[in-house]
Image (cartoon, rainbow, N blue to C red):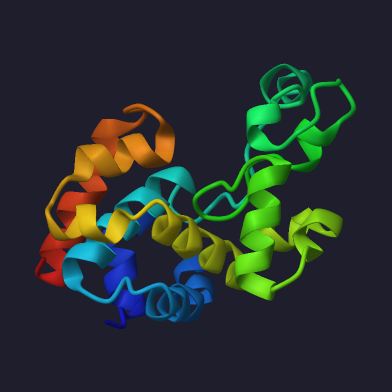
Length: 182
């Protein structure tokens, strides 16, 4: 399923000109990672819309000390247990915020068949890679099946670990389902 820029703007009205920038990349990523039905696309765009602030952010917003306290000592994310800056280096990037060195490695292998994201993590801030990484994340978390069954709360939990921003996600999902006929 391909969506148009007009549809994307109806779903994410605050995306502005970024909708035109992202639309070919979202469509290519959706095709590659089998987000090809209205139900899947609606759920995907709702999650992407929330996580990216309607396509405004492809890099996590942090204050001056957040990087150290949040991720720098998180071995579960593939970061070292020392305060050495890898938390900031491998901060959340892409439309669904790939976070942690371990996830950057997995994503890099999936997208490029190498580890270039370890050397250049900022590549996930480029529209093509931001969209591809989000669709890859969607695929490895097996969210297509949940979308097919309308299990939106479970999708949010697998992306966010909880229900952070649930109301915004639901509002975007409702618009997306209406626009896409899902």
